[in-house]
Amino acid sequence: MARSPIVDHYGRPIEYDQLTEEVAAPRMAGVRQVWHPSVAGGLTPGRLSALLQAAAEGDARDYLTLAEEMEERDLHYASVLGTRKLALAGLNIRVEAATDEAEDVRRADALREVVESPEFGELQTDLTDALGKGYSVAEIIWDRSGKTWVPERFEWRDPRFFMFDRETGQELRLLDEAGIVNGLPLSPYKFIVHRPRLRCGLPIRGGLARLAAVGYMCKAWAWKDWMGFADIYGIPMRVGRYGPSASKEDIGILMSAVANLGSDAAAVIPDSMRIDFTQAANVAGAGEFFKGLAEWWDKQMSKAIVGQTMSADDGSSMAQAKVHNEVRLDLLEADAKAESNTLNRMFVRPFCDLNFAPGRRYPRLIIDVPQPENLELIIKAMEVFVPLGLRVEQSVIRDKFGLPEPAEGAEILGKPAEPAPSGVATATNREQPLTTAGPLDIVDVQVKTLAGAAAAPMDDMVNVIRELLDSVSSLEEFRDRLIDGYPDLSADQLANVMADGMAAASLAGRFDVLRGL
Image 1 (spheres, one colour):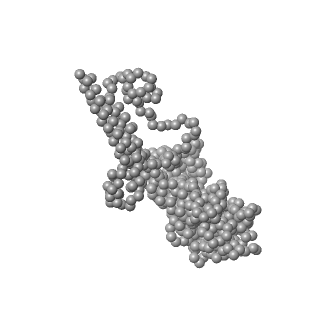
Image 2: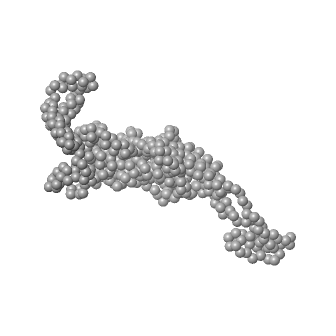
Image 3: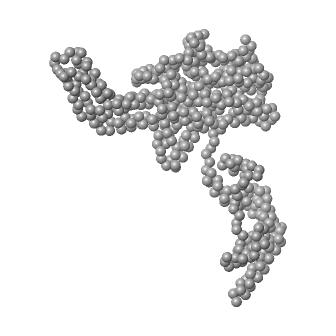
């Protein structure tokens, strides 16, 4: 079997022949079968305690089966655990080169091509199974038909196909007939083992299913009692009476008649027997008790899995929901970081070692968690700072609001044009007579005219001051240099505009006086 000088993090050399084969596939006979008897049916405290203890001691088959069945049988557990899984599986993956050197960029581009494939997205989803069970395993089936080693597919493997070593309880090993007691070590660069490390200690004790198992069992009992109560609620008690000479056959007939009255509302009995109806038992609040007990356990599951109850169980104000969403964001960031570390250690490193020369740093694979932004605050900030001279790239704002670049020739929304002052000719109405619906406001006209004429010289002076501000390192230095450079600022054009404005104001005043006479 061909071996390589490349070794994994356990120091084991790669066996090239195994890279393209399925090592952990299920079998019809042997220790890796896909068919397992049910565990959740008839679960009792004693049985639950025994299977949890067995899992902690190395035999986790029944516990893993229970974790799987809990997602099938408990609607609330499936919902909140699915919410956390899908939140992680739906995140985008970003690939960063180790440096800006051409070789590192080339390696990052090759990795990015694999990460963008549909198979890698399925792998990302499969690894989230570790949140419930404590670990998840995917086998890499490598393809060497081309010039490079690339993953042909990623096969999710049943966690019951594996066991942890007896000595430390940390190393995952493959169950196989060749190693019934301790299992076989996982082949180097063949498996991706994700352990989210939700808590310290043995990995098999770290899954969310272990936290929720007691709640699942207690809620199942509450549901069973609740459905039994609902089945007889409001139905009057039927009491059958028979005489002392009744035979066993007669008693059986009477019992069948009493039972049929509950479902068929009809029965046939001999004359020597009778059925009495008593008032239905009225247990005040019994239904609410069962409902409250089931909902209480649901809330405990929500706290354990998504870290809150607001979005999963309760409804409340928007302010409270924002606080709870921040808690969930912390969990999502931790999950994304843990999965990123797993993929970097167990896929990025093997991919680079198989395809590129050693001795360089590896590219980084990062699962991005988008940060919520207050778009209303951004709008208000733009309204304040843009008029003051802040330059903002339009594409940045479009990205934040999810707005595409406008197509050529498309109708564009924009600031509505301000109506021209009465009596003032514009490009569109300069041929129209200067008629007004009211008195002509000469002051407003002069103010707008002065503002337009002074804009250019004011911008020149502000640009000089801005360049000066960018070149200094302290406010004291800016003050001193501004005082020294003030005589050199060109204000001639601004002075001319102000002189024209003063002259226009004087003429306007005289016109008002003459018009008043």
